Amino acid sequence: MPIKKAIFCVAGYGTRFLPATKAQPKEMLPIVDKPIIQYLVEEAVEAGITEIIFVTGRGKNTIENHFDKSFELESTLVEKGKHHLIDEINHISDMANFAYVRQPIQKGDGHALLCAEPFIDKDESVLVIFPDYLMPKKAGIIKNMIQIFEEFQAPVLTLDTVDKDQVHLYGVADTQATTQENVLKINYFVEKPKTADAPSNLINIGYYIMTPDAIEILKKCGQGHGDGEIRVADAITAMCKQGKDIYGYKSPVRGYDCGDKLGFLKATVDIALEREDLGREFLEFLKGRV
Image (cartoon, rainbow, N blue to C red; front, side):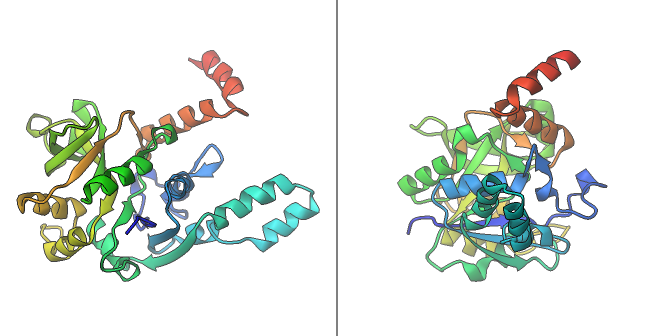
C-alpha cells in the first residue's frame, strides 16, 4: 500500500519555551508568519500524504482551529477586499483530511503514536512526525523517506548530523553503510549518551516511516524504562536485534531543533532570508547588526 497517512504527535508541553507555551502549543509558534506545524504538514502533503492525524493533548485546541475553516475570518477578509489572503487561509484547511485524537497521559513518544492506532489499518505503513525538528524544505526529506520505503519495504527514519558536543541531547544512531548514498542501515540507538560513549554524531530527529510489524513490536515493548515511558527508538532497536532491516536517511543538509530556542532562531533567520518579500531587506538589517 502506498503511504497516504501521517501521524503528527503534538501532545508535548513545550517546557523549553515557557512562558510562551503556557497558553499556546509550541507547534504553533510562528517562524516568520507561519506556525512550525504548518511547514511540516505542507511538506508531507507535497510528498503525497492525504490524511493527517494529530495526537494532541490538553491545551492544543489552537492546532485544530488552525487547520479548520474560519468563516468569520473569511467574511472579514471579503469585506476588506483581501481576496489573496482568503485563498491562503483556505489552503490550510483544504490541504488534507484532518483527524484528532488525544494522548490522555504523556508516557513517551511510542505511547503517543499508539494513541493513533485506531486510525491505522493493520496492513498499513504510516509516516510519523514528532515536530520539534524542522528540516529545510529544499532537502525534500519526507519525499526521500517515502522513496526509500517504497524500494526496501522496511521502516525508515531520518538522521541529522550534529556537532560532537551536542550528542548528549539526542538519541544517537549506530549505523552501517549501504550501496546507496545517504542511505544507512540502523544497528541500534543510544539515548542521550555521554560524548565519549556516542557511537556517531548522527541523531534521530523524530521522522519515521513505521510498518505494521514495527507498530506490533512497539506495542510489545511495554514500559521498558524506570520512567514508565514507551519509546519508538526501543521498537527500532528491538527490530534490529531480531535481524530485521531498518534504514536511516542521512540528511544532506542540517536541520533545526525548533524545540530549542537557538535552533528556533536559526530557522527563523534562514527562512526569512529565503523569502522573496523579506530576504533582501532583512539581510541589510542583519548586516547592520552583526
